[in-house]
Amino acid sequence: MKIIRTLGALSIATLALTACSGTADDKPADPKKLDDAASIACDDFAHGYKAAQTQSARIDLANKVNKWAQQSSTNNIADNATALARGSEASPGAWKLGADAFAQSCLDAGWKA
Image (cartoon, rainbow, N blue to C red; front, side, top):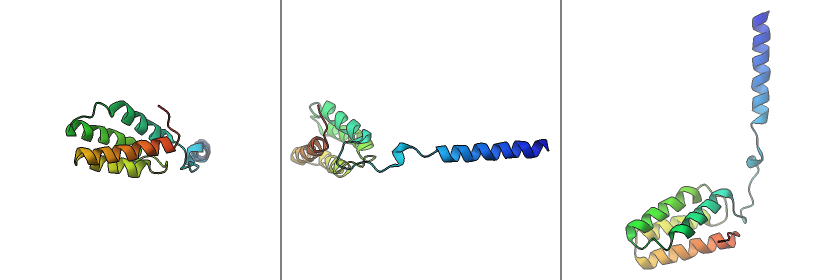
């Protein structure tokens, strides 16, 4: 009888935990607004842009930005971070184009310096 009560209690606890596992984060985010991942990516980009004068520094910054940007559902953040990464491995002009596009996607989503 004691085993049945223990199993019953465990079953109830498991059901309770399963029911509570849903969070507000399960709701789709508004893709027009800055989500947490995009905010971090934009902050990292803004803090590192001026110092990214060499190709190696640009690649490092693009990798840091992409770590967060690819987790974002904010419009254009992930795509423009990918373009930023491509530009970091190309010419300074390509880097500038990618940087401008990424910065604009941050501003469009409401990011503030």
